[in-house]
Amino acid sequence: MGALLLGAIATATMPALADERGLVPATTQAAPGKVLRVGLIGLDTSHVTAFTAMLNDPAHPDHVPGARVVAAFKGGSPDVEASATRVDKFTAELRDKWKIEIVDSIEALLPKVDVVMLESVDARVHLAQARPVIAAKKPLFIDKPMAASTKDGAEIIRLAKAAGVPVFSASSRRYVEDVLMLQTDPKVGAILGAATYGPATIEPHHPDLFWYGVHAVETLYQLMGPGCVSVSRTHTAGTDVVVGTWADGRVGVVRGVRSGKYGTYGHTVFGETDVVSATSEMALPNGAKRRAGYYGLVKRAVEFFQTGVAPVTPEETLETLAFMEAADLSKARNGAAVKLSELLK
Image (cartoon, rainbow, N blue to C red):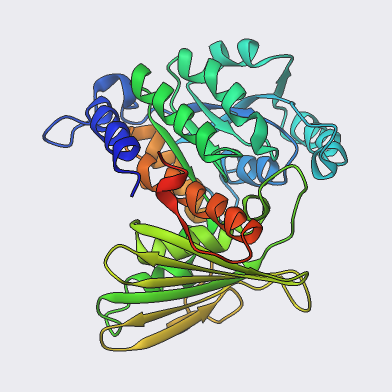
């Protein structure tokens, strides 16, 4: 599926990030013990204040050491309600509570920081905002989704590969306890299929699943791994059901919810030896403490900045974009199956 595009990206990207021994070039590794200076781009999401609290406050119960937010560029999109109505509030909190320096441009931000977290809630601007970061050779984390189209995502990956700059993008739902415990549950055996569900509110400037359904899609990929070849979608006002068929014959299903109770995430894995389910509201086994929802992602982002190795490959990230965009094409074609290769050509 999309072999030419994915193959070209994989062949060109991975040597830039690691040699044949899996070692990362020194230019992408942080010196041991160094606290990395983090710059934020796009202050129109609650992620910026949540991430800053975890990184900058050693007393935070889910503190992640090794990096500290020091500067930020406001950004914002006036035609996206979730951006226009929140960007000033989050900017003020970063400036006044956390004493983060607010700068006037990305170009002014880059000399002040070692690494960048691109947080703009409007994925349409991610490519333009990533360009100067990559040109400055700063390791880059891009909050979900990587871009507002498969084409833009492929261009970000191409630019990063050409510059030898590590790039990583993911949803926080990949790394919450209820997902990870299913992924590694010894009772399950090999995962033969999975079903996930979660909120799927829609924003008119983005393909439908890109806005919020991305969380359930990325959960599916965390459980199934890459390799989807086609997608079909059933759409109603309150629900989407998206079925992906993998090259090895496995089937993964995403249910996006817009009616009734839709704040809960859930997932079921169908294994060789057992079927196991979990939800975002369940108590963890053996009385284990549940971390804050963003903890796992922030921890892995810092590890990525320290090592230059992304826990999700660019190829898998690109495939998740194609999965979601193919779902839009399937909707337009009355539920017909759409091959991901159509978007990855």
